[in-house]
Image (tube, rainbow, N blue to C red):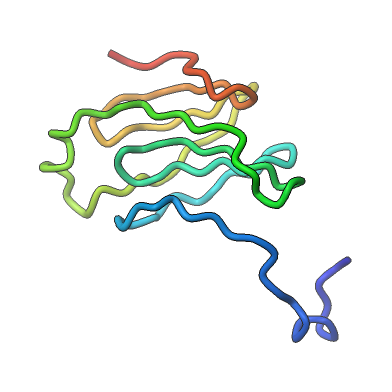
Length: 113
């Protein structure tokens, strides 16, 4: 049901997901058609979670950014998120590449050279 002043004290955690990474997590997740997409700090993995099934992981895409990018990051090895357009998730990696990933399959659509 809806969250209302009267039921706020009874709200409880339903599920959570850990990326297993200890770096800064600054990307805001995207939610499209019942799927939550999250981009991790380095190594900039894109994770798709099924919100209709208690956050079950659907797939994970790893763009394999260059390890050397970690040494030149100014403010931790974070990622600031991506955007959804026409069935794809677009985002930038720490090593200055842009990627597009098919939102339903997790397959790379393209990556800059």
